[in-house]
Image 1 (tube, rainbow, N blue to C red):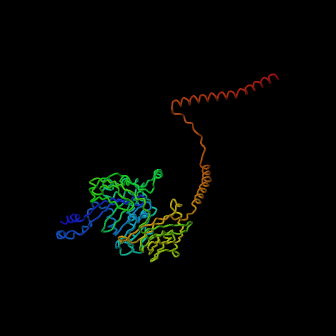
Image 2: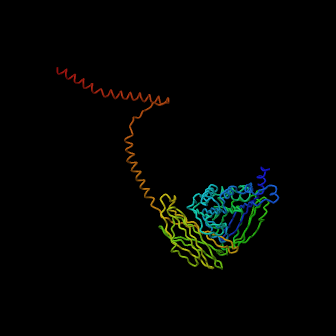
Image 3: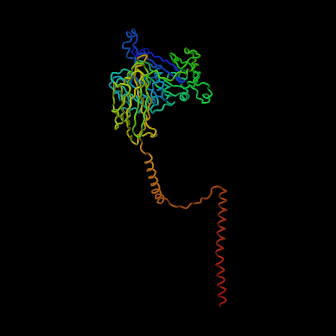
Length: 548
């Protein structure tokens, strides 16, 4: 009976898997698409009648058999006791559309945020193990986010999991991490349906998605006791890209129609439903930028996932932002400059916001002379980085912005000189400054919300790499000419070349004939050289005879 208790305990853990496709037409004939895979686990206590038969049944609830829930994520989060985990890898800038859809809030490059539970194991050790595991799972350079590159926010951040102490949270940016199709392969393998059934089929043509999209992002969100959501998000531009079509159009402001189907958005026409998924859903978000011309059945696919939505774009709508947004600009060069952050509040009431900015060690801001305009500074925290230890710093602002105002925060900075071996391969390109995180309350739900600014490209002074290159070339030339020639003279010897006899029959015959010819020629030359000597001797004998 005791051997059966663990097996019976496996039945008490229930899980579900749902997939959802969201389509949201945005302004300027752009379409936001999201393929979402949601996993839930029910670790609630067993029914009461089981406790009388099997005592201490709750001990086996952590040994639930996993049917569809990603096992790798479950093992990492349970072993390291993670309360919340957010991972994203993005390509392109979505700051212009974050006010229309909160799911577009992703910084450029890789972003990792984790909240840990209270435990005897230090947070730094758990963070080190976490970045190593995620780097191996998703082929992202998270192992570069060590304790020097990641930061611990100095305050309790909204829109994240509720933790008791700020020291239990870590945040890291990799703004230069390149998002490519190779990152989608390990991410897609975690989905239990594979790439042959369900909505995962629409991810089989990543080259089409990246070619047609201005923004592409993959990632997942985990929260203990809540859903685990894997997602792929993209903004597809469906506008007329042909210059000839634009020139022949009689009215550029005229309403145009677009057929939104799987071939246009994903490069895949259709798919089939999966028996593993508990539900498959397609959602079309209404907006003022379009009107629906014809509509097919959006739910209950009956084994075949296929959609075709004909919409009419309303190009008369002016480009405007309906909610708070943030922009950043930088200027300067030769080791110094300034950064200007602007926060727009189009609401009718004042709003309080919080900003968090990660400052790399090579950036030295001058915050004592900062300039804050058109808003009230309610809080300010600055934790400087350490140049010697290469530790990243952070800046936090609390701002109160009036209705319809544009708040600006500007400060000057200087850049440090990295070591010669710390420069990347393309040192002249510059270095990227991570995005600023802006926290505020949503206007409709009053829930905490966060958006990101664009990343900045900062010019960092570089030494003259051509000088050591020229010195090395000159030194190598001198060494090659001096030592090389002496070495050749002292070690090289002249040896006569040996004419080996040929091995073929024809070669032997030619070699024999050549030898005979050379002997005849030498013999004739020898005879010609002896004839004058004999004539001279005979003339001398005749002269002596006459004299006698």
